[in-house]
Image 1 (cartoon, helix red, strand yellow):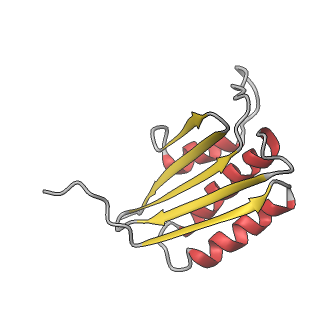
Image 2: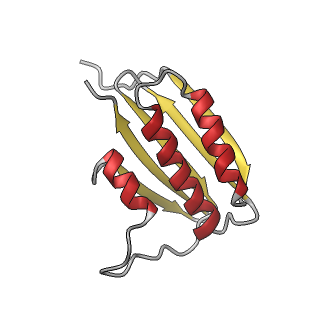
Length: 129
């Protein structure tokens, strides 16, 4: 049995690190994912991750990249930003955007990978049924 993933479709685009670009991310992803069973969840996740890149990374005023791949049973969304400090939420703090990502992708369905000068936040959204 092969464990290789077969990509059905792939999207990538780079955006300016400013708040109005988050709406552009949503619009581009919505158009690209038209007909995908997880389109609504993937668009919302991309929006949250893009907002975090603009508000909480060194990409503010610079650039960030959104990538998405559609596989036979799930959709993979990731946003690469210019990194910076990762601030963990304080206990009892209000809900944040990553709570939405957790609700849609599951607690083990998303993560963050860091390297010098960049951070990639990713989520895997399974298709229902």
